[in-house]
Image 1 (cartoon, one colour):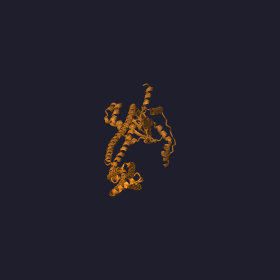
Image 2 (tube, one colour; image 1 turned 180 degrees about the vertical axis):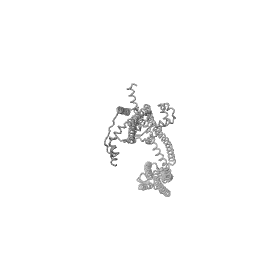
Image 3 (cartoon, helix red, strand yellow; image 1 turned 120 degrees about the horizontal axis):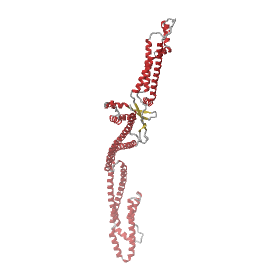
Image 4 (cartoon, rainbow, N blue to C red; image 1 turned 45 degrees about the vertical axis):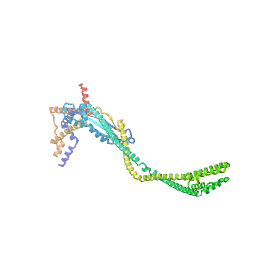
Length: 551
């Protein structure tokens, strides 16, 4: 029994077995393929054809580097495209496209609700982003419609709207940024001017007590202190000279008679009289002052002038004595009268009174100068004392000023960059969109897909025919060959009787063969027609048939 099963299995696995089954039950396969190909051709011709037109928009990079002009628009390109896509698919824009291109004009479409029309149009619009390995970005815009011309026109219209909306989007963003920065810049500038005015008024109010004037005030204090010391020293010297002159006046008052007789005696002498004692004292004082001060010192200059004045007076006195000597012959009485007049005019010594007056005036001037210097010293000391307070107050004002100034400069730079970036957008020097491949009239519909229909219906016909053949063969329990009998019954076959056909059966068998050949040819024709549709397209094939048939 096992050997019989093995023989049966071997017989069933041979290719000749299946070929015989297919030939014997060929009508299942021929009719199934015929009906399937016929249905496929009918579907290919009758189904509505949908055409898709597409255009490619290239994102052109900036013509000016970011090193020179910073971009305002930092939005990712994909995000910007999504925003523009929402604007394109907005109700207002879609209604404009429907009206402009007369979409949904068929009678059955006119009864559609407006919302259904918009939703159908949205489903047929597609916007996708493409990024190459070099970083170049492009966008593909496509539209599907049963009319190829409308598919092309609507695609081009959407592309134009896409570019316009993108440019408008970037312009609005750029100009909005510029307007905002200009407003902020104006507010900051007004605040900056206000603080500058406050600082200026503060400096005017506290002029002389400002931090930058501290060193000048200290130098003035040092200078005034030196002047004060010099004035005090000069005042002491002047008071000493006044005391000296007062002492000399007292001495000369006590010895007036002695000095008058000495004067007479000296005038009676022949010449070479000794200089007056006051001139010698002044010369000694001048020597002392020169040892202590320089020639430019006011006390040295003053004493030097007094010495020169006494020397001139001495020379004039000598000249007078010479003149009077010539007039000696006029009489002793005249000489005595001249000497008395001279003594009355000059008192004991005419230069002492002059010197005392000059010293008193000098003392008074020095005291006035000292008081003035002291007032100046008090003023500068007050300024130096108030400088730390003014510095703290001024630092607070300058801190606000520096902060607002920094903000102002930053806003000014960003506003300039925004203006340049806006100008680049207007002049199309920034990132722009350019139609790389405009939409063209589609020649081949994307739906129905003839290739897929061909594979689907041809495969379905073959699968159905083969399934019917294998099913009926499985249900058929008859023996077709001697090997089948021996395999199934495990008995040897001794004799076989061949099948004898009558004339009618022979004619029917021949007719069967002819019809099978015709069906096979018909299936081949259907298969060829399907192939032509796949290669040339339905519309082109129909047009060709019409031209050939003269329709």
